Structures are given as C-alpha cells and as structure tokens.
Image (cartoon, rainbow, N blue to C red; front, top):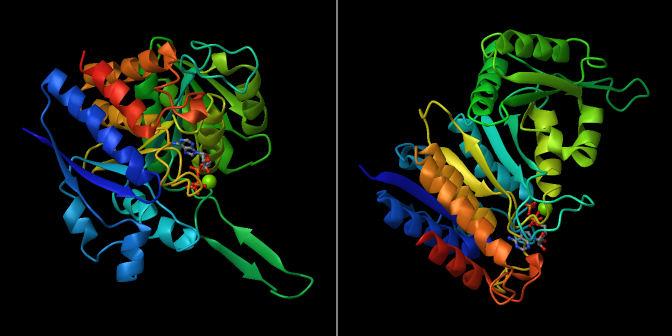
Amino acid sequence: MAHRIAVIAGDGIGTEVMPEGIRALEATAKRFNIDLEFTTFEFGSCDYYLEHGKMLPDDWFEQLKGFDALFYGAVGWPEKVPDHISLWGSLLQFRRQFDQYINLRPCKLMPGIKSPLAGRAPGDIDFYVVRENTEGEYSSIGGKMFEGTEREIVIQETVMSRTGVDRVLKYAFDLAQTRPRKKLTSATKSNGISITMPYWDERVAEMAKQYPEIAVDKFHIDILTANFVLHPDWFDVVVGSNLFGDILSDLGPACTGTIGIAPSANINPEGKFPSLFEPVHGSAPDIAGKGIANPIGQIWSGAMMLEHLGHKEAADAMVEAIEAVLGEGDSQVLTRDVGGQGTTVSLGNAIAERIGG
Ligand code: ATP
Ligand code: MG
C-alpha cells in the first residue's frame, strides 16, 4: 500500500528545497521499491495568508489527518506577515493538534563540513536530541499580580505530567536501544529547580530499570551545554524537557556546521496522527529566490520520514548518499554555504543520482 505524504513547501527557500527533497525521495522509492504518493497543499504559507487572511483553511485537520506523514519546507516571511501569525497559524497548530510530542534532531558531523568546534572530525559528533514538545516550561499557566506597581509579580508555571514525562522518556530509551552505543543522557537542573526537575530525574531512574542494557547519565543543563561544545563525543541520545530540549536542539546542530544541512522531526510515535518532517532552517528570506539554498536539510528530513514509515535501510541509503556527495567536495555541485559554487538543483541532483545507485 502506498504511503500517503502531504507536502507543504511553505515560504521562501522552503519552495526551493522541497522539490529536491521529493526528487531524492522518489529516487529512493524507486531503488527500494517503496510506494510513495505525494499530495501538495498551498496552505501553510504566507502567500496563502495574504490571500485568505489565515494560514490554514478551517478544515485543515480533516484534510491532513489521514496522511501517513507531513513533509514540510519552511514557514515565515516577516516582512509581509509577523512571525507570531505565520508560525502559530501553521506549524505549531500541527504540532499541537496532531500531538507530535517528540521533537527529534540528529546532530551528526558530515564529511567535508567544518565544525565550529576546533579539531572535530566526522565520527566525533553523532547523537540525537529528543525534546519534549507539549508541556513542561511552555505552559500558559500563570499571570501577573499588582500590575503597574512596584510590587508587580509575574509567574509562569512548569507543568510535568507523569504521562507527558514518561512518554518522551520511553521514546528516548527506545531510540537509545537501537543505537550501537546504547547511551542515554538526561538534561536536568534538579540542584536549582526543586520540584519539577527532581520529578523528571525520578522518572528517568524509574524508566532506566526497564532498560538495563542502556547506560544512563544526567547533567545539569548549564554544564551539559558546556559539554556539548567541549565533549560532543560523549553523547548518543540526549533527552530534555521542552525548554532544555529547545536549547539543546539548536546548540547540537550548530556544533555540526551549517544550518542548511540539519533535519528535524515532530513525531506522534503511536501513529494516531501524522508526524511532520522539516529542515531545521527557516525560510531564509535573504537568500530566497536565488537558487542557492542548500537542499540537504530537506532531503535528510525525507530520510527521517522514511525511517519513521518503517524503511530504515532506504533512509540509511539516503544519508549515505548525502555523506558521499559532501565527502567528494565537488565545488561545481556543492552550494555556497558548504564551500561550493553550485546551486540547490545541482546539489539535489547529485544526491538523487547517488541514491539511484
Ligand atoms: P526562522 O525565522 O524560521 O529561524 P530565518 O528566515 O531566520 O528562519 P534561518 O533558517 O534561521 O532563517 O537561517 C538563518 C540564515 O542561515 C539565513 O538567513 C541564511 O542566510 C542561512 N541559511 C538558512 N538555511 C539555509 C540553507 N538551506 N542554505 C544556505 N543557507 C541557509
Ligand atoms: Mg531565524
């Protein structure tokens, strides 16, 4: 049976890298005999907003819920539509309504890419950040008291439910289980945040009992961020609450070089709703329309999508093709952000050809 993929290219370079993502997926599907069916949607972009006064049609949930996955480009065009409208009106709706409670980002240093961390080579950095995506510090519970007076107080609560914490931890432990190193690092701050973070630690310790073969450690978030920079080779799977995961999931990919390469996934692991796969980068208005955006973040997100759909071997082949093309370092092929003079299309083509075998 075909996997049904909803395609939303969005704005800016999203519309340029998306065709390369699809080209790579089609080459992979052909080679591995996978049936992919793409359906393109115009909504979820600022152009759609300017025409309709909203980012999504009222029935978007009904239109999308039956798909097996959402393949997303990038959203936002701050000159025309404020970010709080474009982002809240599209991506964050998907995350919330489709209960995509896992945000997953691989942090892997690729051949030919210079890490901003001195002396690091491919193999030194290869880990995942797993972020809780629905609760924690990003609750809207709280308020202001004595507003406008000297006694003004502002409070915002952190919410951790047992279900919410356990489900992200289970996902992270399961992921660690599939990795050769079988190591899990938990981000905490139980020396300063005295109620929620000790609870997080407790749930980690409890869950660890069910995974005796996994080596578990924890770091306070302050020293953990330092260790991402000083010792990225220590990490395999790193799991954090919404806020800590947010910080780590930007820092991790930043340690692996250009933003044009990093992929991400917002996952509903049970498959009750579609999961969403998108590059880490945004719409990058400064380079949009020039045909020079790096398509690898989009292509690699496609690989994550195939893995999620049960095609690990095909996903690995896509990542290997990316590594091979980057490793060859042909400046006619590579885009400028990775030291070449090529275009979105030249790099996308080279990867699709490589996948084709
Ligand atoms: P957002 O607001 O969603 O973060 P943005 O439009 O600010 O998006 P980013 O994606 O954060 O842009 O990217 C920051 C800068 O990095 C861009 O302005 C661009 O110069 C560069 N960049 C981003 N993506 C790519 C890419 N795929 N290829 C080459 N350069 C990129
Ligand atoms: Mg930005």
